[in-house]
Length: 336
Ligand SMILES: C[S@@+](CC[C@H](N)C(=O)[O-])C[C@H]1O[C@@H](n2cnc3c(N)ncnc32)[C@H](O)[C@@H]1O
Picture 1 (cartoon, rainbow, N blue to C red):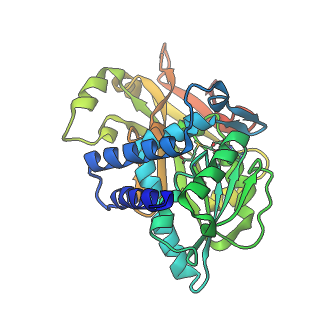
Picture 2 (picture 1 turned 120 degrees about the horizontal axis):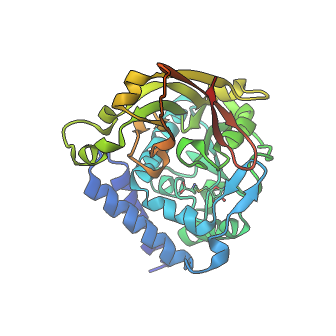
Picture 3 (picture 1 turned 30 degrees about the vertical axis):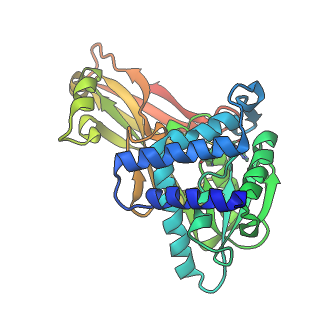
């Protein structure tokens, strides 16, 4: 029996577990663990090799090394929601663009094109076509090996070694897919990639993730253990949300030009007494019902901004702005 005949049924089994509508944690944990080991085994990616752990430093943020990109699979809810979200987005694009293959532009594939690979077991090459972009030469080389190991060349238009913030796509893009982010849109170039590529997305096309919303809010660190042991209330029960400070979706992304908007907010001494830490919370709508909420994934862990210290004031004001550049992320200042 050929190698692909052995590999593809394993991938199909993993995919069907990841595409289940319900979130049953043991199933998701097994599927992501199996996927990680399958891909590590076939590519023989050596975790000890320093070069595979080294980031590519780009003008708009860092591209994490291929080993860390591979490890993203183990962020199990991330992988599950993105795989199912992409599946639903392709189905929606098939409805919207009938009779032609859906073209997915995937910016930042890592060594395995983790989010696209499962789609090759549930769609045909007549139904979906991918263009892969990757900036890391080692990840770019490995993704080509992954394509040939699984024999999925028919699904792939092109595999381009490029910085996605400089790439000009050819032809219609029906889905623009990228997961080049950390919590609170820190350090990696998700915003710059989306901003650069969004004009090339068909006006009726889909951005995946559909929306990334950053909200400022308050936490009480003394409640952390209670939150982790609470099986009745959802984790968000422990957050006192203040306001949204940024939303990345295809409409905001098309409208950004020059500087990103500044958002001011106010915290009262009474609020800080109950919840004395200011944080940023990340909500990701991958597609439709596929969402990641705070603490569900590494991408949605709260980011602590500051402890709140009041002297004689009744209120403190803060101003937030997303700044692009080689270490992108939110900057804040206390308002006088
Ligand atoms: C967080 S990993 C995700 C890998 C994979 N897509 C997944 O979801 O498991 C991001 C990948 O995007 C690549 N990347 C980051 N910035 C990029 C850019 N500007 N252009 C192309 N690739 C980029 C990195 O090198 C890395 O391989």
